[in-house]
Image 1 (tube, rainbow, N blue to C red):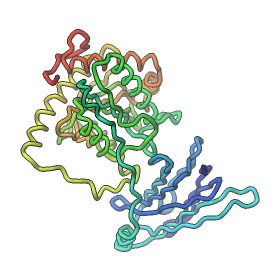
Image 2 (image 1 turned 90 degrees about the horizontal axis):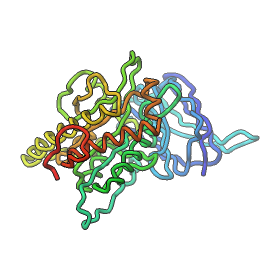
Image 3 (image 1 turned 45 degrees about the vertical axis):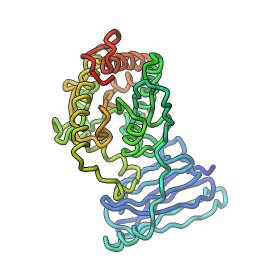
Image 4 (image 1 turned 180 degrees about the horizontal axis):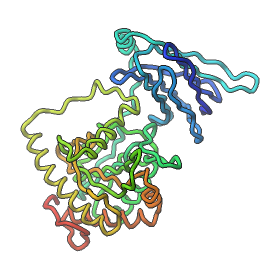
Length: 375
C-alpha cells in the first residue's frame, strides 16, 4: 500500500501546482466538477498518513482536502478560485527523496473547463451499503446515521479532534444500548471511517423500511461565545432561525466537500401520495423530536433553543420520521470533553433510548414525551 507523506502548494494565480510526496508509484484518475469549481484526484491503494498534511491556500487554490472516499480508494479534492485546466506528472523516488505526484493547474475559460469536464467522466463510487432485510424479523428498524466520514471530516476541535470520529463513537454506544433492549433492528449507515453520500444515507433508511432515522452530528462555531449544548432538528422548507439555516447549509455541503457529482441526482417525485406521506412523516418527526428533547434533559446539556428546523437533505425521506441531533459543539471545550467521555456517552445514549421507546409506545421505559401510534 502506497502512503502519502506530505503535500506542498506552489505557484500563482496563473499557474499553481500541488505536489504530493508518496512512498511508491500511484496512477491518479483526475476529473473536474463545476459550480463550485473542483479538481478531483482519485488514488487507488494510496493512504494518507495520520500526521496532518499541509493544505494552505495559494494561487488558484482556495482549499483542498484528502481522505478515504471508498475502500482502497483515497481522494484529493481541490477547490479552485476560477476555471482551471488540470494535468499531472509523476517522478520516482531518487536518492532518498520520496516519489512525487505533481498536479498542475492553469487558468482556462469556463467553456473549456465545462468541455473538459464532459470528456473526463467521474470515477463511479461503489453503491451504498445494503443491509439484507430479514422478513421474519418484525421488529421496527431504527437507522442511526453517524454524520460525515472518510474524506469528509466534519467539524474540528481545537486539538484537531474530528467530528466524524466523535459522532461515530457515540453512534456505536447508542446502537449497543438499543440492541441491548432487543426491541429494534438497528442499522447504521456507516460503522467505520467511510464516506456515504447524503442521498445514499436516505436510501439506506428507505430500503430497510426504517421506522425512525436519527442522524448524529456535532456543530462548530468560529467564535461560540460560550454557546454549547445539544440541539434536535427536524425538516422544514423554511428554517426556524438563522442558526438553523447556517447549520443546514453547512451539513448539506457534505457531497460537495467529498467531490461528488451532483448533476445526476434524481429529482423528487412530484406526487400527491408522496406529499401526503411527507405531511404524516413530519408529524411523527416533530413528535420524535419532542421525545428526544424531553428525555435528553436528564443526561445532556441542551442548547438554549434545543428544538429547531431547517432544510437538511439527509432528513428528506418522505416516509421515514427523521431528526438530526447535534450532540454539542466541537468548538466548545466542555462539550468536546463530554462527547469524548464514555461515561457521558452511556448516560446520553440511555436517555435517547428511552425517548425512542416512548416514540414506539413503550411507556414503561419512556424518558420523555408521549408515545406515538406508529408501532
